[in-house]
Amino acid sequence: MSRPGKSSRLLICCTAFIACQFVCQLSQAGVIRDKLMERRAQQSEMEEEEAATNGPRFKLPPGARVLEDVAYGSDAKQKMDVYLPASAGDHSAVRLPVIFMVHGGAWAIGSKTHNKVVENKVARWLPKGFIFVSINYRMLPQLLAREQAEDVARALAMAQSKAAEWGGDPDQFIVMGHSAGAHLISLLSTSPDIVAQFGVRPWLGSVSLDSAAYDIPAIMATKHYGFYDKAFGTDPAYWRRSSPLHALSTAGAPFLAVCSSKRPDHPCDQADYFVKRANAIGMRASVLPQARSHGDINQQLGLENSYTQAVEDFMASLSPAIRRHLE
Image (cartoon, rainbow, N blue to C red):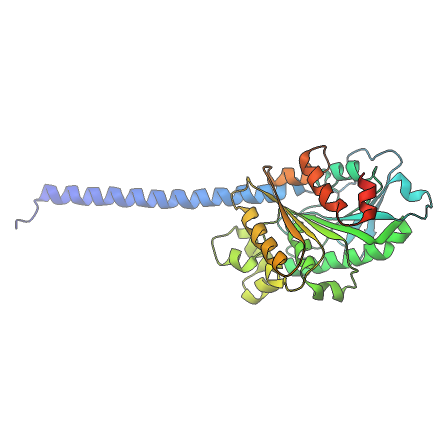
């Protein structure tokens, strides 16, 4: 068999070089694409939570007022705003239900005062006779995710203890969170040890607004966004302790998992599996998929739409008192 000539060898080398360059470019393009997708996800996770630190920038319903920066700890971040409807000051014997809200922001940023966290919810539910509580909590790099959930528990216990002073009913709390905040309230919903540690009383139900973090070990074992590493570290034991799915062992309060069917990381898949596991142990839980963006799931709750009505249907199922306020 004859050896290829010099020109043939040169052609082979050139072809191999071009192929190598093409493969390298494809690989680099893939890395760039992944980085861009991660950056977009982080922006989606964070942009609606960017700080609004000077109080509400929207008009409160007539007669409503807000108690700003009520402390539940010694740290500057351990504060909550309490939005009171006009009926909270009438000294009625009827105690008002309370919605307790936890903002998101990739466990790193966000604010209790951001309009998208508060505005439409306050406009919807204060006139119906609800008290609305929006909290701040310590975040990255100060605390990792599980310890952030402990701050949320501390705030919830304090809000329950103060509810009667505000005209509220400590036994009529609905706990709600968006994004990272949804993970934190989901972890509380499945972690009786954290709840007991901080003296949290039972609450009526939980509304998780578009969490993609029900199964932390599964996330960390596959390709994932970089902010998960910052929030959950590198210890697999810590991942399990911070995972709502892995903490799920006894039936907690009724649970509604709202999820975006438009997100590229498919949060409804995790929500479905979590709800099936919850149902299997006798916990009332359901999934509410929405063809809305991550941010819209937060902002559009409270507007007049089928989504708000579906969430209110769940809320009304929690107690006769809640149902009366929503009628």
